[in-house]
Length: 264
Image 1: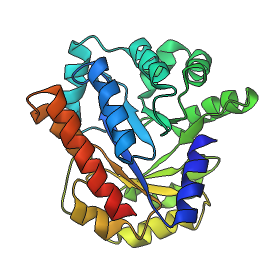
Image 2: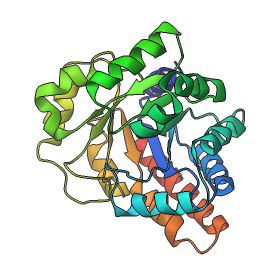
Image 3: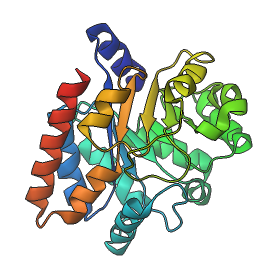
């Protein structure tokens, strides 16, 4: 699995994974392609693309606005698949889709999985996926021996269910830093170290922390607890505030380079 190899290589080098997130199609599919290539060249290890959806329950206002812009620009699942296909051979970082369950269900679960594999998606994060539905997806992935990681989200409120949530997961565990939705914040759940320790006690796969991480200072504070750091809303906000596509690409590339230095 490509994601596993990324973490293994970083571990041997004593480095942590840098996993940026942007919304596919914001402000356009062409812009997203350019941004992904810039992040890859700046040192991102895995890149997460959000599939725009009309009811993004886990997302805060910054990503909600990005989703709206992407939908208004005509972005849909097929266009995201074509974007992933077009990036084959242009980047080193594996691509992960953050996608809500309804679009998968509408597409047909088996068809969706097969299409992901065909275009080169390496992993899936499905924020609203119940454990029961996950079993169905897992069976399809296993029965076809598809090289696709199912990445679970574990929140501080999941403590009693952590083992069940991470059971049979692959790629990495997406640990949610705080209760609530995405968005940059200065304060995280108490005992973050204990929370990460609890996850690591029940799984051997890497743990990456996301939700609310938006500056170098925060990354420096948390990097010793985890195997990777996920950065999202701060990048989406840079895209929103940039006057031109070139400005967005430049700002995000520089920010990723700075974070890469911290995580090395």
